[in-house]
Amino acid sequence: MLTVKNVSKEYQSADNPVKAVSGVSLSVPGGVFASIVGKSGSGKSTLLALLGALDKPTAGSIEVDGEDITKMSDAKLIGYRRNKIGFVFQAYNLVPNLTALENVMLPMELAGMSKPDRKARATELLEQVGLSEEKHARKPTRLSGGEQQRVAIARALANRPKLILADEPTGNLDSQTGRRIVDLLHQLAASEKTTIVAVTHDDEIARQTKLTFRLQDGKLVTK
Image (cartoon, rainbow, N blue to C red; front, side, top):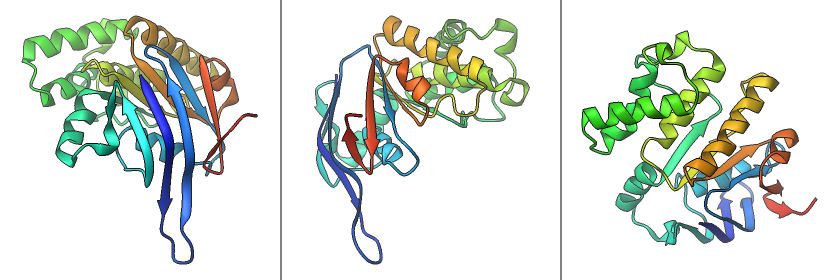
């Protein structure tokens, strides 16, 4: 489902070019929860940005569901990010003046879905991620960190993406809540047949995923 072949990303600095990602190749089947683990500065955030088409590689190809996103035009990439990719961020990135339900409805509104349909799907998704009904009308400031992350995951699933990219999804959570979120991602990968790739510095999280890729100085390593 996700196939990365010899991907590199080079940035120009004042002195010498810097390779943030160097010759990375990996593959993740559909419906699998995988992790990319590495220390700060290892290149994992750069790789996640490339997978999400937020940046383009200097070399190599990235195929998602059989399409090479590195060859897409900017106009096509807008639709790709909206319809094929779901993002989950460490800081949740919820819209503060919208309720939990409205936050989940937002991507569907941008995709042109009718209001009754997006409300029904948002309600279903919030129930699926375990947010109780009385909290659907609450704004993010009235939800705990774990609850906000559940809303963020539901929002990421809104348009039935083929791939969900999670950037340190448990980074702001206590260990018990973090384990619950990881369990939830496992369940969703299986039930929604969605490929999930999480970037983390936490080896404990990485050990719980079906596939683990370790980055060091922009390269995949085996240890």
